[in-house]
Image (cartoon, rainbow, N blue to C red; front, side, top):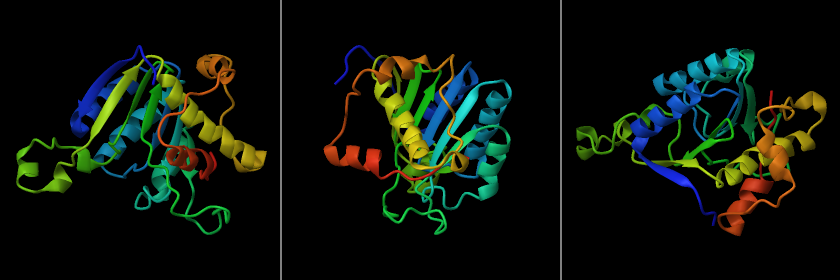
Length: 227
């Protein structure tokens, strides 16, 4: 438990996407995004286009996505991001040529985390997909058209709890870097400017949240490499 935070509840996709996209637009140093699903649809392209725009402006964008969650997303979608300078990591690839025999394919990364400039974080249940585009309070949802009005909640966090999100994101990335050779990963080095929060927090033990099983899955069953 960490006190002293400002937390804003974001009900459903429309409110969540509006807040996330506005925060990304205002980024000045770095954007760290981790998601289970990143679809090649109108919502996915809104995020991808904006991430590429910020990368072109000198804001470093780092992306972690799940291999199973993005199974239907074409490789070209992520290749476009890589070519634009976005550092990407595919979690636990299902490609038999990349899979780690010491891990199970059922170990997935369901976390949805967005951290911008080390000052604002988002987390919750909303993936990047058009199924979250409509409000669950809409007529479509009441009539049972769930695909057009998927129900979920996100939160926007400002305050010391950002420490947990930061540690989750970078522990995953740095862990993958340590498990692979320099030629197999391009997980970005920590910059002299901007991400000072990692330098200042590394000397302090991270506060663990969630059940031990969740911590185990999140900390030790991760597979992928930034490319």
